[in-house]
Length: 192
Image (tube, rainbow, N blue to C red; front, side, top):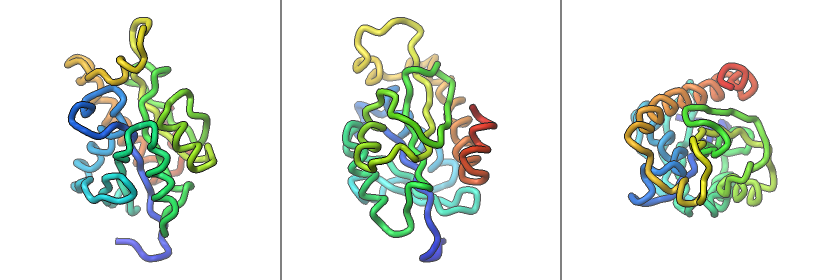
């Protein structure tokens, strides 16, 4: 599928491993990786760098779909391990995370930026020593003031919210394809 000189895209969805977390707000990154795997008829189950990984061809590019199994706060360790390998660079890294500051159903693409309080992004930035990677943030903002952020992000989506989640995952998958096909700047102009 790829020649030795070709750099693979690395699409990393952030989440927590295990059934207990599968449908929680904090696992939108994992959900999008699973969506892409279904869409491009691959599975994400090979183990590498303390993550589950699958390979697909998206927009005529070799793409590796990654779900770190380190738990959110250590996601950077897994991502750093991948970037030490041949055919992988930070320029072709896309990280998908949930975002408390964006309303549910909203996505935001950025070519670089801070962690914005997200522990998975903090870990990746710390381990890579750079903020210069593409990230796709998917909104989970509550409609009311939160007493406990941790409880909220680790709660399952409601049945009503899951309908919106399906729509935002489809929209997010289109945004990922646009980044791969046209680059981050053009994709940002189209999707933000």
